[in-house]
Every structure is written in C-alpha cells, then in structure tokens.
Amino acid sequence: MNRMLRIVAITGMPGAGKSTAAQALVKKGWKRVVMGDVIRAETKRRGLEPDAKNTGDVMRLLRKDRGESAVAELCLDAITKMGAEKVVVDGIRSMAEVETFRKRADVLLVAVDASPARRFELLKERGRRDDPFSREMFEQRDLRELGVGIGEAIALAEETVSNEHTTPANLEAEIAEVVERWEKNVSH
Amino acid sequence: MNRMLRIVAITGMPGAGKSTAAQALVKKGWKRVVMGDVIRAETKRRGLEPDAKNTGDVMRLLRKDRGESAVAELCLDAITKMGAEKVVVDGIRSMAEVETFRKRADVLLVAVDASPARRFELLKERGRRDDPFSREMFEQRDLRELGVGIGEAIALAEETVSNEHTTPANLEAEIAEVVERWEKNVSH
Image (cartoon, rainbow over all chains, first blue to last red; front, side, top):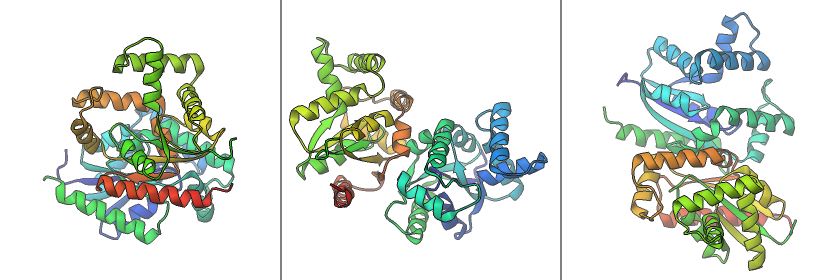
C-alpha cells in the first residue's frame, strides 16, 4: 500500500449529490477523479463518441475483460499519473472497487443519500445531456446501478450523509467535517 | 389501500440501530412490529425452537413457498389483528417487502446507517444470544442480509439517518423529526 495515498471514495445513487460532496473536498485541496470521466476517456481512446450508449458499452466490456474492479484500476492509473496524495474518487459502484482502492491507499467510503423523489428532481434540474428525464428512464438507471452492486457499497459505507433536507453549502460542510475527523484518525 | 394505515418501515444493516429508531416512535404512540419477531412466532407455531438456525430456515422456507414478500404478508396479518393505524415495522430486508406494505398503507422507508466498525461494536455490546460476536460471523451475517436485497432497500430509502457519531437520544430525536415532517405531508 502507498502509505501516503488517501482516498475518499464517494458512492450514492444517481442524482444523490456525489459531485457536490466531492467539490467540498476539491475546495480543501483534494484532487478529484470522476469514475465516469475515466470511462469517457477510455471510450474516446477507443475511437468512440463518449455518449451514454458507448460509455455504457465500454464499461461493460471493461468489466467483462478485466473483472469488476476494472474501472477502479483505470482510476488508480490516473491517480498515479497525477502524483496526488489526497484524492476524492467520485462514483463508486461496488465493494469490489472499494477493495481495489484499499489495496493501494487508506480509504474512507462515504455514501451520499437522497430519496428517489428528490434525486429525480435534482437530475431534472441538472439536465445534463446523458441524464434521464422520464420517470421510467430514471428507474431503469437506478436498477442498472443496483445491478452492479451499488446498494452494497451504500450499505457498507463508513460514513453516510443525507442530502434530503439540506443545502449544497450544508452538505459540503458536513462532508468536510466527516473527512477532517477521519484524517485525524488515520494512523500513518 | 387502507387509507388510515401509516407504516414507517425501518431498514438497516445488523447492529445499525433500527430498534433504537423504532423505539423513538413507540414513545410517540406508534405500535411496533419486529419482522424478526414475526418469524420467531411463525417458527414456534411450527413447533420449532426459535433459535438462529430454525428462524433462518423458516424464513427461507416462507420465502421459497410464498415469495420474497412472505414475511411482510405475515406482518400485515399481525398489524390487521392489532387494529393499529400507525405502525413502525422494524427490520425491512428488501424492496419487495416495501412494495407489499405500500399496497396496503402509506409508507415511509427509513434507513438507519452506521459503519461496519461501529455496527460490530454495537452488536458486541448488545450481546443478544443470536447476535454474532466474531468478525467472521459478523461479515457472514452482513453478506446474508445483502443477499436478500437489503442494500437496495437502503439505497432506495426515502430518509437516511446516520447512527455514526450520535447518541441514542439524538438518533431518537432525529427519527421523530423525520416522521413528524412526513406525517404533515401525507395527503389523507
């Protein structure tokens, strides 16, 4: 294990507020790696347009060829290239990914939670091209994430932060506090 | 749907603090139904000692014979007999169970979360005969619960309450607040 590497691994259902949580740490000097971006980069590297279909296909191919932790391995490559010592990884989807990070770093697994109703509203507001807008697409996306094992990662998180009745500023403050407490306890 | 029935359905990994959360509502006049108790009663009804092995066997048999929502159906029978209108159901293990309750009542699904390390300590302190004490038994029990689909119920909860850095009194206050807010919004 690289004893100097600390990873805050953020999981949560689509729209729960993972990026807002990660942003709180970026403001404190942490480097951010978005697992979805790593897949998008890999999709481009393969000469494909990184749209929802192609990135989904590449993710499935990666997992099929290299196992459940394939995306986590790509993230670790990116982290090594960056030379960063404090990294927030945004978009954990399974415990297999968490275990991969644990082999190389001290890891704090944080779940950001919000109700399906609130996540649907937040995704609608966000309106990113590859975000679903219909209730049906939203539910299918939830099921896809659950199928990869995100429910287990959420259930086994070391810290859980609710984004249900709060503001982005308060969510950021809570994440910052949780991580500060953890850093005091990490034995190096 | 029985428009007069309100159910607060509590999910969470073993040791997370579900009973403490349920207790907060009992103090407010809610009736409590423990899904584990319902299985224990069914085990006795079948002339078996309700130990960990037999209750596990009966649960698996029930689910095999009557489907994933078998235990929820037994709970609904118990609730009907009680004639209660406000019930907290302690021990939701899957979304199938939640959907079963939703057919008959207004339901708020609440997840109580705590880290594996904290849950292990809380279970050790509790020391109930059928609670595991070794780390290995603890992890096996976690995997068993996750295998039934508890991760999905936690991921899809409408409210999440963290029991990580709090006291039983504060956890109780938070649950009471969450439920009070919900009751104001339930349209009857």
